[in-house]
Image (cartoon, rainbow, N blue to C red; front, top):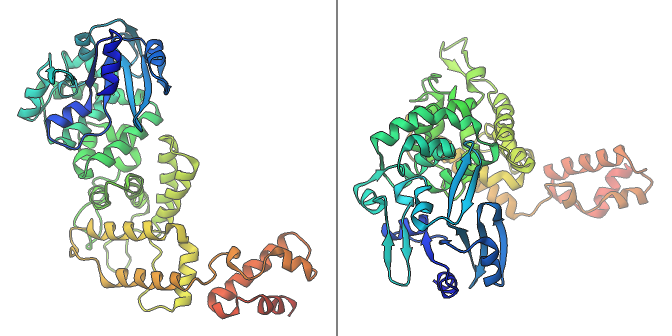
Length: 434
């Protein structure tokens, strides 16, 4: 590794550390390498031409080399911590640096020059035994940074490790400390969890088991135990996690949306007057509102909140079978062409997440989206921008700029959606004149 060689050539001990070392021992594809070194941040910056600060106050510098960015962090120990932020001291040894890490499987260093491991806490043995164990005293490790509670769930599920009994007891004692974490850190860890763990139901099941879900995602926590109707095998919460299982991990944000799609069911639930079974009329409305509430608290961007809220609001909007192409165009306008395929993925996951249904999605859903794809290939007007005229054309025939001009364009689009043949400049102008 070139960075380690350069640091050592300048008389600064350096080692590869972190998840890449762990994953290489498991024979997995290795992601980003991290380097730990005795060199202080300013020394690292002086030794490499392409660097940028990541967290210099905590000893971390990004080094760009061979089209790859490596995080280089100075050996350090914790001086003080409030469970969210740590005050660190540089000048530690490698062993002291490894001692401040969360779990033994992450506290292994590799010397690439001699191809030897530095493993003072038995991380390799724990990895081989399938055990997730805190480094040192777990009652000290979790309060140092309560994000480690969430990391324990993610790492245990992703690596299929059993949590060591002493570590698990400490985790139970300190799980409530997650309320001290910032929304941003919880969001980032949630997205990382949804990306790395195929089984959302397993990892978020642990969130629920240890009381973390009620603290960080209460809108979802209250869905458990809410019985559904005869068409469902599971309560709302269990079904929701199964839906998320059926969204691909490469789409972590859509997995977040799937976790939100039925949040309004507990408050919308009522008894059907004819069947006597549960029904959830217009549950998508409170679901969208609760989605906005939850994602704002988790500090998702305004654009992400709006996207998720919209997908949840329209997830029950499905045209009946055998509708006209004009009806499909109107539907695409309602749900948004840019959201169409995420909505399709959500519908498929919703179907597969119901254990009372057959595994194969119903033909009407598949046929609907085949029809939508065919309609989109026709390249007919679905937005005002797709019309053969614009506001300047309307102004040229005497319409004054203002709200009426916009209403006129909207009206024209409605006519064109019904009959795409109308979308010519002459026809549209004649319709306005008339």
